[in-house]
Length: 357
Length: 120
Image 1 (cartoon, each protein chain N blue to C red):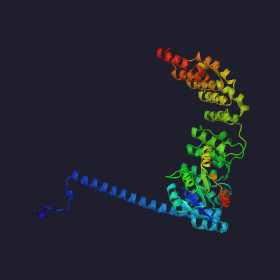
Image 2 (image 1 turned 30 degrees about the vertical axis):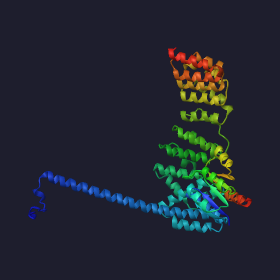
Image 3 (image 1 turned 30 degrees about the horizontal axis):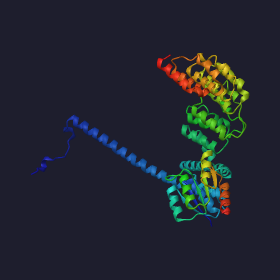
Image 4 (image 1 turned 45 degrees about the vertical axis):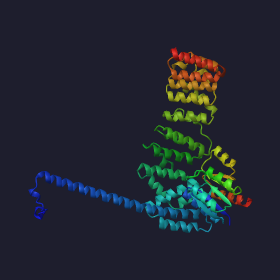
């Protein structure tokens, strides 16, 4: 039989040993931490559900509003815009969702509808909000604001965007570069004059893509940036000279064949090859041996595209016997020049490899 | 009233197409993926089909083959983001009547739909 007197739960803290007191303090501390953590999770979850629900409602309202605005001839545009502005653009969330949805529509539509959306963006007063976002200070808000301005072709004073051309975050720099490219009517790369941070590979790809797909004016003369302080800008300009077939700039590229900077030298060889400048081979073959491997590979590419078997043989004497990567490349090109001697060259190559001649 | 089937997975594009084509006086039905489209095609007859090429479950090309096999006279317009020549050529070789690239002009699309409906 159990004697209930033994279960006396009345705690006399003072009588407990110090280690027990410490245990109780820690237990209470961690228990309260766990409760706070649990409540926070629940609160964040509820807040998120509430926010998502508001977002969903605003989105569905916007889809109807935008479709009516764009396609319904009986839609009283002025009155409806006024009503929408007064009733559905009151909170920051509503404004953000509206901007996002207009951008989404603009992405998928073109022609008159796209122009109508640009007008609507203005009429709803979203430009002012975007300009506030621009100076928000957080990089992602700034990048998003610049993106909205460039997507909707909204022109703002140049100095407001120029300030972000040399931002520390790549994304902000990239968006400001795209802004200038998309809105330019001429001289789309003028922003390069004010660029002091190197162009990343992605930025170079985006700039090239925007030049091809968005810019409608005359192609810029890329030689104006051949003496820019940044290697990446010079490299990009050399490449673009070839992409845009600017043959008149060939003399400007020749000095780069003597450049101490391998990146620029390689780009110059590659561009002159793409421009099919035959005289290039006379300039690069005699000095083949003194170059780094990356330049040697580029020279071999040029010989393959512009030269003949005689040009290739001039390089053969300068090839180091142990550099297998270059030798394999050399022999592959040789096979292309002499398909009838394919078998012979292959046996010779295998023989040399075997005895490491 | 002409019956049009729109097969598209982008909700925004669906709503816009539905709104515009209904405004033009058509009866529009919507399928959000290839499977749903096949189900609708089994139970209904359409005067025109407007389809994307990148669809969940059944690709646009498979769907076009299916339509051409079962209802060869139904005109098809492809609405796609693809601008690659080979994809456009493949679609025409499969028998589609028109190809519109995204972003698209709703007015232009509406005209093309009307032209094909009148032709048939």
